[in-house]
Amino acid sequence: MYRKKAEPGEVSLAMAHAAKMQGAEFIMFAPDGIDMVNRHVRGHRFNRGDWVQAEDRFPDVVDNDDSLFRAGPDWAALTRDAPFSTWPLGGKQEIMKRMERAGFRPELQIPAAKVSSAQDILDFLGHHKSIVVKPARGSGGKGIVFIAADEQGFRVNQGNGDETCQRNDIVALHDRQFSDRPHVMQKFIPSRTLSGAPFDIRLHVRRDRAGLWKTVRIYARVGSGASIASNIGLGGAFAKSVTFLTHQFGPRAESVISRLRGLARTLPEEFQALYPDRVIDALGFDIGLDESGRPWIFEVNGFPGAQMFALEDAVHRVGYALHLARNATLAKEGAGA
Image (cartoon, rainbow, N blue to C red; front, side):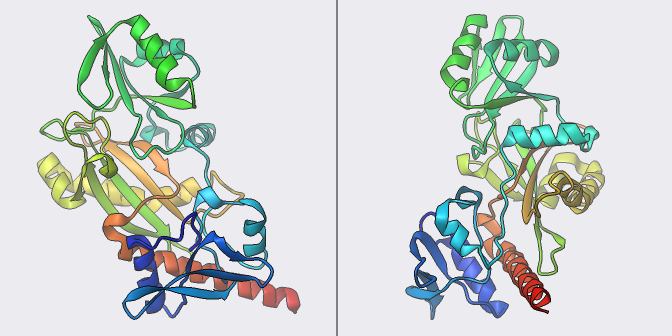
């Protein structure tokens, strides 16, 4: 596991256990632990109940994140003879463009556009009345702003309740918060609990030891207070999907759950087709449900977190790493023959 900082936590602990269960050696290391001369890495290994300093040869497969993808000569040396797990998919804007060009599941798509100016926001509000604006690159639920047009002008919510604004306030908001980095805007879909809290359903999928897509977990994320997003990192709650959806939709829950399970089976391979130049290892589809239970794709994440079910996720993650290593060995043997 190659990360910016070799600081073992819950995910790396889960990976260490999953590796042990599947007969693999696991070491966590950072860029400053790479010895390019001797082709060794220094980092941490879990041994007899504790993390210990360890040194080993270059790994057979690198579990990376997108922040270290192709980062300098260290990356080139590590991956010269070893495959790596994770390809970046680009930000929200890039993903949105690819889905739009391919006509990806139009029945699930929310009208969306990039933000280039305050006028873009005002024009979009003229068509959709209620929208959300968010950073084009992953924000962990941070920086999301709700804007709605009404008789008094506009209502803006940045997570602390509604504020009444006028046109010049929208312009100022754009200049203050949206002009320094790319943002996208979407029509607002009222995915709300019976008590009015925002929620979405995360479809967490990952390739397994056979290289096939596996549904790791389907779960609900519920926002708190006046929040706009349901991200757990912003104080939201985690809930089992069946229990949550049964309470939310009553007799209709069974059909909603069945459709979500179907999406978890079919969406990954369809989404993979948008990236023919790379193999995607994991995806997190954030699905909103309106009052009728109709699903809408809020976001697609290429590096989904699994803190709430780290071991369950790690079993398949390590399995996929072993799959990559086996394929690399077979390819070398074939080249040698």
